[in-house]
Image 1 (cartoon, rainbow, N blue to C red):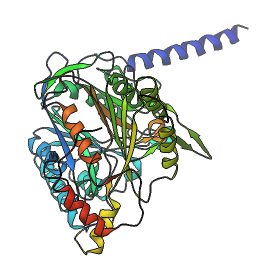
Image 2: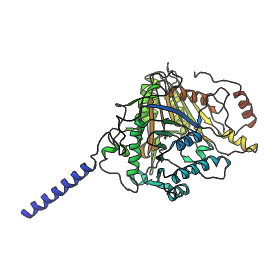
Image 3: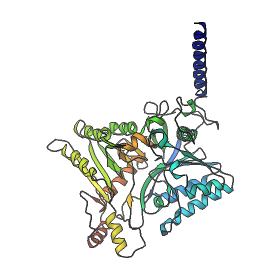
Image 4: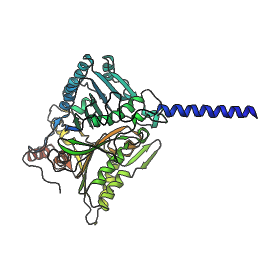
Length: 467
């Protein structure tokens, strides 16, 4: 009996020791990062700029809004770098024989130049890209390359795309570090300059990814250094282009969300719930289902949130979905279901369009222009009369449930200010919505003569206000 007691006591002592070790491994100084940056000494008077990649051959009216090119925005960040560059990307390929890949080469050359100047570069990738030539070359030049094996955690993948430069400047958006994002794909993101208060929080997501390098499982307790600094209940108050704003970053999936971190889906909910007049959504894919091994099931959350906004709150909703040959046919079924909900319902205002660049690509190819046969709108954002969300996910249930992504929410009371992100992003949406690329229904056989006519007409007409 005494021997059994000894065994039990020994087991309890071991369990207690393990528990204490776990607790103390998670205890860190809250509110201050290793470089001394804290909520008290960070910058919160920031400059913000939208960045876009508009593929060659994509034309809008002369009066349509335009923004800093993605390539120039990224180069600006690298030219500003004096100490460090941290990049998380879902793709890694800057070399290609296509003529539009020259910008990728310039970017690669700049990264190598920074490494030769002893500027610290850290790169986070999905383990699927372990054989990436780009990553191997940069690692050989001195970059620290870290791989996350999300497949081992929950059959997910790395879809996050964001940059942090000198712990002061941030990029987040749809584009990844690949030549296509700088060439044939229509991308959109945002750069915030001199915004170390935001970096304080986003850096913790980067640190979380870094902490998982080469690990096959997620730790049972997260370090307090990885807890969120800001969220929906405690937003970062700052000025963006002299416009008072409230900001926070979100993360996915739930498995990778330490204490106080907001999930991307909850961030989108907060943006839609704040809307009083309209919700405009631009995504590549709209597919509210989850595909897992031998099972496909309906994922109702974002689809249901749209229905709630339409029926219960009479919010005007516009949904702009990219169209290509790869578009899942179920998308059209879900869109038809959404449209049906407004049938004979007073005050219910839903319109859906498909942004189709395939016709332009096919006509371009037929006329032997210097172009690719595949272009796609990969924007991923929500804009309302009160806030914007810019992230890395399309509205596909599987992504939110299993994949790693990050998003940025900006609330602005002075949304009418010409420098406000809301006003700028709303204008981008309207530009795309009223362009000849946005169609209420899709056609698979391009009509090049019609395309030319529409292009000429578009160059003579200005943007109208959304209905």
